[in-house]
Structures are given as C-alpha cells and as structure tokens.
Amino acid sequence: MTLPGREKRGNIEGGIIDCDVHNAVPSIESLFPHLPDRWVDYMVESGIKTIEPNYYPKGVPLSARPGSEPAGGPAGSDLGLLRDQLLDPWNVRYAMLNCVYGVQLIQNREWAMVMASALNDWQIAEWLEKDGRLRASITVSTRDPGTAAREIERVGGHPGFAQVLLLARSEMPYGERYYWPIYEAAERHGLPVCIHAGGSAGNPITSVGWPSYYIEDYVGFAQAFQAQVVSMVTAGVFAEYPGLRVVLAEAGITWLPSLMWRFDKDWKGIRRETPWVSRPPSEIIREHVRLTTQPIDEPSNPEHLLQVIDQIGSEEMLLFSTDYPHWHFDEPEDALPVKLPPDLERKIFSGNARALYGLDDATSER
Image (cartoon, rainbow, N blue to C red; front, top):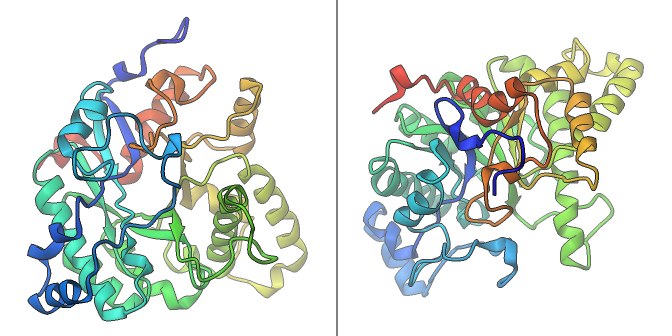
C-alpha cells in the first residue's frame, strides 16, 4: 500500500538504485566450471558440500521473503525470481549484488584465493552478463591482501563490477597497513570498498568477550562497524587514498552522529598522535563513508529518524537498499518510515548511488 500523500517511490525519475542485494550460489558445484581441476578434486574428495555461512538462523522470518527460495537452492540464487520480486515491480534501475558466500571464512589462503576468483567469474557468467541492471561486488580474501589486490586488478575493469567486498568482522581493524594493498587497487580502479555485515568469528563481536545469545551478536554488529570507521580514519587510510570511498552495508545509521561527536571531541585533545588526521574526523567520515539504509534503525516516533538524518549532517551519505532476499518490508514506500523532502528522497533512492558508483546511463550501458 502506498502511504497517504506520498509519491510511489518506484516512479523516481531514472528508477531506484538498490545498493544491497544478495545473490547466492545455488550449490558449490556451480563454481566447478570456474575452478582449476585440482581444487574441484580437492573439494569432491574432501566431501565439501557448501561453504554457505549461516548468519541468519534457519526459519527466522527476516532470513528470506516468502517465495524467494527456488526449488533446490537457497534464497537469492535464482535470477528469474530476483527480476520478478524486485527488479521489475520496484522499477530498479541498478542493483548492487553482495554475494556473502563463505570465501572470506576459509583459512587456507590458496583455496580462498581460487574460490574468490571462481565466485567472481561465476557472477560475471550467471548474473552480470544476463541482466544489464546488475552490478556486483568483487569478492576477495583478506588472508593475503597482495593476492586480493591482484584479483581486483584482474576483474576490476569489468563494467559489471562496482565495488570491492569486505566483511565487518575481520582479524584486524581495517585501518592496519596490512590491508592497504586492497585500498590502493580499489582506488586505482575507481571502486568503493563495501564493508558488509558478516565475517570471521575468530574475534568476539564485543570488546569484552563472547556473547551468549544471538540477539547480543546481532545487535553488537554496530560495534564492529564503529571500530572499522574509527580505525580507517585514525590510521590515515583516507589521507593515503583520498579517492577511496567506503560503503557500510547493513550497519544501521543511528549510531553515527554520536560517534562523530565523540571522535571530534577526543581528536581535539590528542590530535598530535595522528598528525595525518588534519581535520575533524566527522568531516573525513562525511566525505568518504556511505551507509545503506536496511535494516533501518526504526524509532517508535518516525520523526526521530529525520532528526538522526539531520544530525548526520550530510545528504550524500545514505544509500537506499532492500537487503533482498531478507525481508524487511513489502513496498519501497515502507523502506523509510517517514516522509522525506523530495530532493533528499531522490538522493537516497538514486542520486547518491549514481554519484558514488558513476552510474551515468549514457555511458554505463553494456
């Protein structure tokens, strides 16, 4: 149902840009045509059936919208369903695919490397070449950033790839120089880095140890994103790579204003320690960081969400997302539970993503 007094968002000029859509690998055998024979033999002989992570408990309503699971495959593994359930009815001009298969969780560096390459080639063959509305994230393994950079070099020129995918739970904070080859390659290709919820369970999600309940883990993801933002700004990533942009996907947004306020306050007192942070951290964050909208932190009073957006202090930072096939709402009109000024609505639902990813229809058609 369209909310009273509101223009249907699917009618936004040029169409909606969905910045977080999850495509899934139907089966591990789907990757075999893109793998060296040695690694196919390795997986068959080892009895490896899947590396699909289980970030959502089975049966949880949010894990998949009804009808998004094709016969014999996980939700998000069928391009036809994606077209029927999202791209066509919602008037999606572009959809950013974030395939959070378990490649980044593999400890064996060589296996992780070949699986990342196979996943990227599979995305090209089965998704990008079959629908011009799709753009995808380059999957890399952070076990070896030099190899990850080479993978970005290998496929970064393909017009279907729009960004590089990392996961929020990492072995070290992403500001560490260990990861900088990834940022150098991404910046060279004009690709943002998307830090998405998920990642290795090698470290606890909290700063005080392991949680006991799923809700602690789920809510605690905001801490991981905050730590990554503080690390990247403090370590000078954006001073070294001024063209780099970072997208935080499934991070929430309401924590950001208070983090920027505290970051600025403390930076003023101890800025001598990090001279490369030459301006208030909030300015750096507003310039270099973007956030997807789903799952939105929805206050009981919708007007409070407007206040949070105002406190963020930028109309360029928010990117519309559905998190398909995860199920947060039925219609685009329900995605943000508050009436937005028309200019801001157009920016969130399309304009900000066009600027970030360079999506000019006159030049981006394949």
